[in-house]
Image 1 (tube, one colour):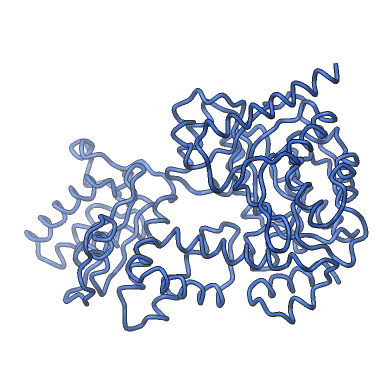
Image 2: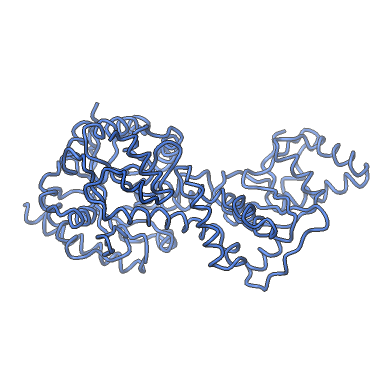
Length: 250
Length: 281
């Protein structure tokens, strides 16, 4: 058997555990084959358990492991790093639990936290730098370790309660559009709930460096001159204090 | 073209840098000559893992030990993987870069396990081509580690030790001799670990791994979750008799004990090395 055919057949067998697939492998000593099957599934399960601790706490360990095993049955790993295997679970959970939307959203929050943890470093702007900046020529951009997740449920409140060892609230749908902001400040990952207006403004910066004046124009167009400028001023002070804004180009 | 072996002597006795011991190493003063890290854990864009490694590197030489290069993949190596590893190598300036004689990926799918290779002429071509590409991409010589294995292939054309010797001769890579893996595979496949060691090209052996294993239903399993057992210490002694200047390192990846326990094990390795050096003199 050619090496390419053997490797293709071996991976197929690892993914589905099919007995006929095992029989087709050209093995002289096959007793240890089960060890590879066990290693494969155990490492993928360990990755998912480690990445989604609060999702597992919310669902209960047995239900989480059953859902994760279903995911492992269907989706083989695609990347050189095991960490990337966690990427697909939120969508898988949303598909498995369409009537419990907070489950998929909890998982998306935890995935964003794990991705922020190892995202590229960036020099965040300090509040003390604000006074010396030429705001008319300032280009603003956000740090790479930031994600905005639109939420339809109170998954952020559930996550925060679980992470702090508190009794989580009952899951419920959100009445207004909102989102959760996930980012890394220094070496700590953080999150906070933001409303739809703040999410919309911050999303403008995620797409690339934007002139401060353009952000102001957008805000004025939405809320009028006085309210728009006031809102942007307040948000920008908060964003800079939270370490969300990268050093600007002038 | 074979690479010239590194002229500098290797740091001698090291431990794996694992999360429970980060603070010990960051505080400095841990009596080891080098630390070894799993390369992939630090091939990230930024954040705490990379920062920890930078800070540890300021105090200790670092060996990069990979688990995902997949030098046995029939469809070659991944360019994005090599580029990330090269970036880490350039930043960390490791004393050793190593990976395993195995395959972990074919096509778009990964296994995240060190899968066994049939020892054939075709596989030898694949492995040597891949190692040559990796050494070119990294701009340095690599060490290849002998695997532990749980199955053998019916179309094997040579023994693992002959295969390894041929890989070294053709690719110019060095060897990372894992004596626990030799023991595990010897028990599982019924060959003599001493015969295996006797056949090694010792001029290429630059590092030796020590670890523990577990007894499973289908054979010994390379678990790295136990202290180094007596049969593995015995193999270390045999290996050091032929490669007395190889760097020696203990791998512990699960059931990780307090650092003093691992340092005491490393002292055993030091004592064996001293005895073997004295007997060589």
